[in-house]
Image (cartoon, rainbow, N blue to C red; front, side, top):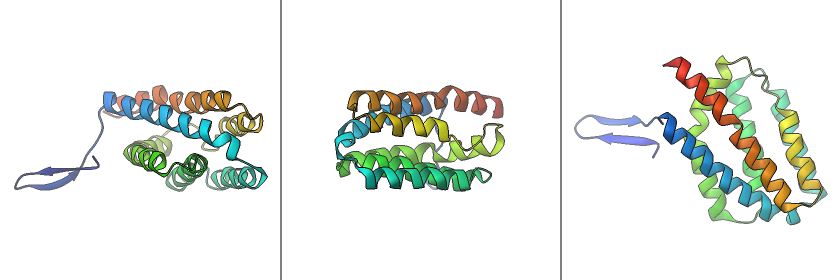
Length: 158
């Protein structure tokens, strides 16, 4: 779904309209929530340390939106990968690819600070409690809270 083939005209990068963007975030929310719920009991000290390092790397690039988005994706994909469900991770990665460009554009032009450490620290705190359902809810809220701000920005850019 990343490229649209046009007869006798070549290929163009596909964009998402607002409804499609909303749908992709809903799907990410459900799938990443599932991945985290499955992963919670598989996450030990070593994995938590790796997640903390990934948060530190996001902080290192808070002034560079493209690099920050890549590290943000790495955090989410590592966390979801801890589920041990490769097909699930493949679907999550494909969905993230669909929203990466609009997110990069939004973060490049917005006033929002790129750290987001507090939002991601809440995810790690939920995982530390061992409450799989609670961790799933926190991840879903984290993803879904992005949608209104991103859509508002994209509507202003039209």
